[in-house]
Length: 204
Image 1 (cartoon, helix red, strand yellow):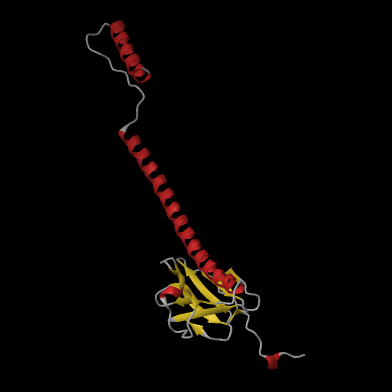
Image 2 (cartoon, helix red, strand yellow; image 1 turned 30 degrees about the vertical axis):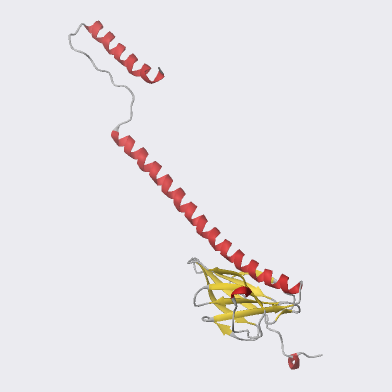
């Protein structure tokens, strides 16, 4: 009823005006309404708001995807360290810089170059918004392609180092493997690596 009340009122007012002036033709009175131009402007503004919301949503999704991938990688490294510390087994995280993937396996064979299917505990691929730029070990070894391997046993990591990751904005993040205290940490930027000093360099 409320929808039609305004037009009825306008129509009755028009009839009243005709009766007052006594003209035989009808007299129209303008009622408030949206013009075509105003309707187009409203539609454009709503479309812009929707577009901005979508851009913000997908931006947050990409950032959360990068964080999720980094979190999975760090968790895999930490899982290897904890499993080795709680047992006398050896584990290895193999990073394939060419294929941008990694896997965690339990070492059960004397042949370390061969990865058996039953040894694989977890494997994952990095996405287009998160990839490994290079890997540096604390003994000076460096890799930006091929395989980089981090082995850990009950006594700790055989080698320390850092895995430098890059996001879609080419921002660097470093996953640091500390073989002295077993810690795996994530730090912003391409951080410097603590290299163990040789015994002859230490002055007593």
